[in-house]
Image (tube, rainbow, N blue to C red):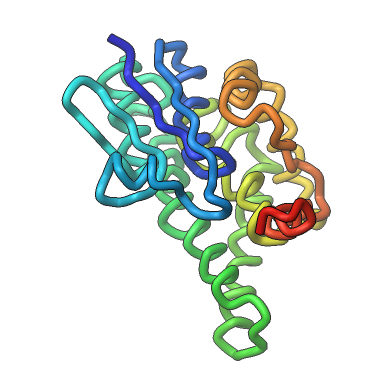
Length: 225
């Protein structure tokens, strides 16, 4: 019986259908729409976290994107998209996999929460985040993927913050050619294209330098907010 993936559209849960497509494993995709900006009751009813992604596998109900990714890889994906401990780039894989939700995404959320502030704390957060992008850009100018020459789950964990998260925070990537070239490579992957067509067919890829239009502004213009 295939696993069930609950995906909140325009959210980090896009990682899970993309992972399933890359692994070429069967899954049932259930789409949930924002109401209008936050998770709807249909997501809150599934797990105490009230956040997507949520996967169901038999009696198991699991949340947290990193946990879902690791579970699917090891239980259904035969360990693919993970570098073994004997691989020379294992530590790179480990670092970038955890960097996504350990530093990169939390930093964007802090900046989003502090939007409009001119405090020293805000300036410090912005400086730190820009340094993160510089380090990532240098990495991707020298390597095809974050862990090196092989595409891994570290890439699946990271791309959301550099693309779809820009619907909520106006991140300009114009000064980061390594990241922009990387995102173009991502969108050329068959697994990514298939997942996007199923999970968020109307969502633009957001792989250009200038920040895209914010979802909040789009909803206001449509009279939905």
